[in-house]
Length: 119
Image (cartoon, rainbow, N blue to C red; front, side, top):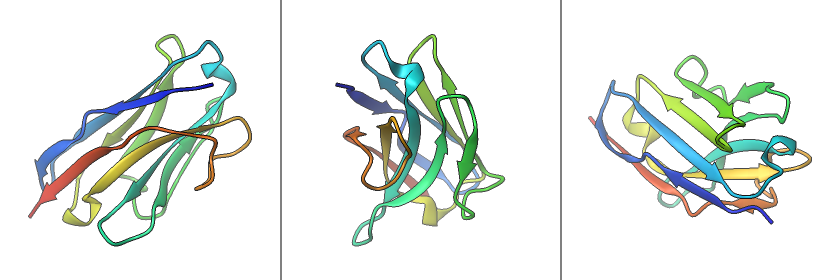
C-alpha cells in the first residue's frame, strides 16, 4: 500500500514558477515509477510528466522545456518544478505511483493540489 500526499499548489501569475511535492509513504518508494497528471475543470485528467524507478524522465509536449520532474528517494518524494507558467496550466495536479508504468489507470493516487495561473 502506498499513500501519496501532494503539496505546493497555489495562485501564481503567468510567467511565474511553482514546485509541487508528492510525499509517499511506505518503504518501497524506490521500486515505483512516479508521475504527475492534471485535470482542468470540465476536462479529462491528462498526463504531465513521469520518472521511472531508475530515474528516466518523460513529459507531455505541452510542458517540455518548462516543467521538470525529479525524485529524492531518501525522502520518498517526487517533485514537479513548473516554470514559465501559463493560464492554460491551471488545473488540479495529481501525483501517481505504479510498479509497472504511469498511466491514467495507475495504481495509487494522491488527493490533488490546485494550481491557478492568472493572466
